[in-house]
Image (cartoon, rainbow, N blue to C red):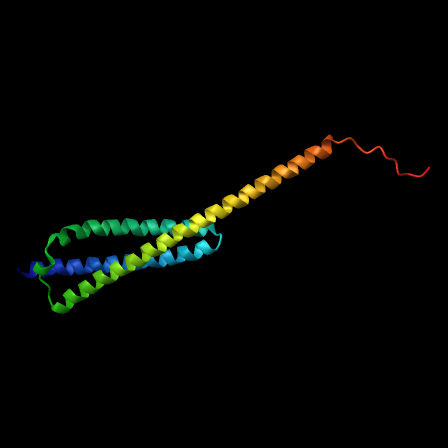
Length: 154
């Protein structure tokens, strides 16, 4: 157990801090996504989803970087101080809590999107029926002979 061990735990803490930053970005984007679902700006929603994908990609890179660091038993890690160990634990807990909130919001988003999809389908169905009725009336009017009643005075 030497300085290299402390360097590894400092690297771990740095990665956890980076993860927390990314999770916070993801949370903020998910909040924006929820706001977009209240409106009808599909372009903005797609931009947010694209940005979220970039954050997910960064989280995946970070996960690969963290993977070898997490193979060490937490009780065997050597920290420069107990405060640093505590700081790392608090960040891990905070990341977990924030991710749970994000997942809850995502589930809500899926529900809202499903409701919106059903509403749009109903509206499209109503428009199709209206269009069919209009077409039927138009074809009926054009098929009827012109009135032969002459209302002009002689």
